[in-house]
Length: 110
Image (cartoon, rainbow, N blue to C red; front, side, top):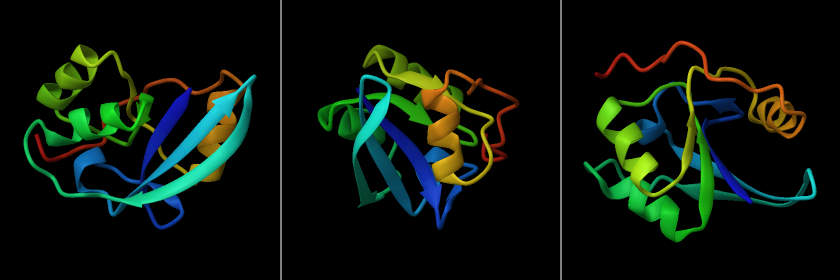
């Protein structure tokens, strides 16, 4: 499974489409086996869900996301977890332990 976390510095970005990077974790048997950081290729309507789907992402974690983007991720069968704050490394550990849940969407853009 591949998990992408919208990232600004060491922290989860409040808006998935406006983050500077995505931290992508490959997870097998409940453990991270690979970590990759990629630059955000740009925020264009409808582009990022397809882009991340093509990279094999099965779950996106972000502080917030607009309803249109969330709907598009759903169409690509990518799980969306929003309302997340904190250091990316802590968040992936919470995810792996099954303790990460969606909270209040932090995106003020929509």
